[in-house]
Length: 244
Image 1 (cartoon, rainbow, N blue to C red):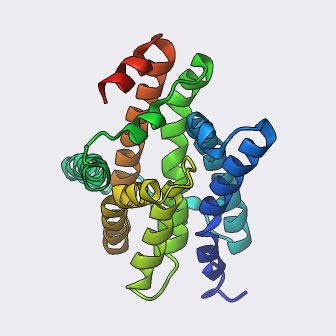
Image 2: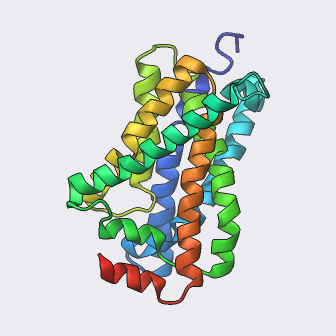
């Protein structure tokens, strides 16, 4: 493999997570004898497991390409304005939250539709506690390594470098968790599309993943905290459900 093409194959990893999530939830439902929609509460644990698998696959692919993770993503120490990084991080996080609220209003007429509450369904407290650290720690390295590093960073056409990774980056959320419902999938897709496009454009221009990764971790940390709350406080989930 020539020097110019040694990492060209990395972009073909982009659909990987969409396929894995779909298969895991469908297979999990079949094995347990449940409906696919009844597996929703597993999503955060499944996401962490798929994150670890994604990181492993990326590292294997990088070994073949004779590249390092920092080279792939442009992640490096120093050379950044702390103030700018903080402002970008907060800005990205705000866009992410407002994207979800806006999508809820567009699709369901509510900024907090009932389907969004299902993402906070309680699980075993030990699992929720472990995932409070594992989910926000693994998500940035898995998703941003894949869609930004292997996607935006490896596709040469400047338009395709934004459109293709952003599409798969957003599409994966339609299967986390998996519901075979068109409105739900549209809701999930447009929830993340604005932030993902901004991520891809910023990374293409600046090659600086740090504020993206930090904001990504913050958003998933807030989700993990919510799941821990509903898991640890008896009746809290039902109280929230009754309010919607």
